[in-house]
Image 1 (cartoon, rainbow, N blue to C red):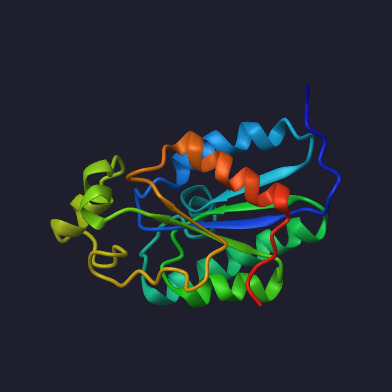
Image 2: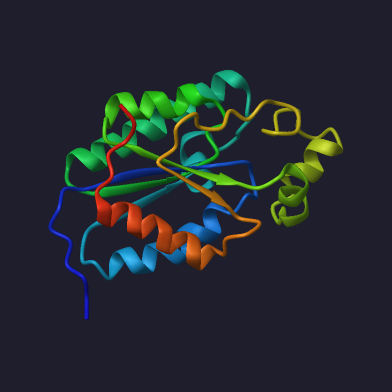
Length: 181
């Protein structure tokens, strides 16, 4: 039986190092949310980046532009009643704060895993390219990753499975928890 959700749309930003487990969690979360019979859109950074910056340089200026565009897209969806899940590293707090300026009820979920574990999990080769000098802007490796200061939820993916993480996020949504003041 479907759980019908009648409350206002929600917006959640899953942030963490590359290969920390964000996309694995979203893959488990999305089918559960779709069973609620509410419109949900995932803004996954790699998919959006292929459109916005198809020849991505990952420079600081390009990242600033990309995350502003991503936040704007999410805010427009949210304004039209679509719940939004941001699946994006967003290595600088200011990127997520800009999104919050557009969507005040935005909840941050910090997906945490040690860099060494992320490097072992890395299927896309992000860290390998960074270590081989093919990239100079890998968050956590060559550039800082700024974790949320007051996330609505913290999930350590070295001890919490993607399924259990999805359940925790669903509990957060059900509770209608408001972000920090």
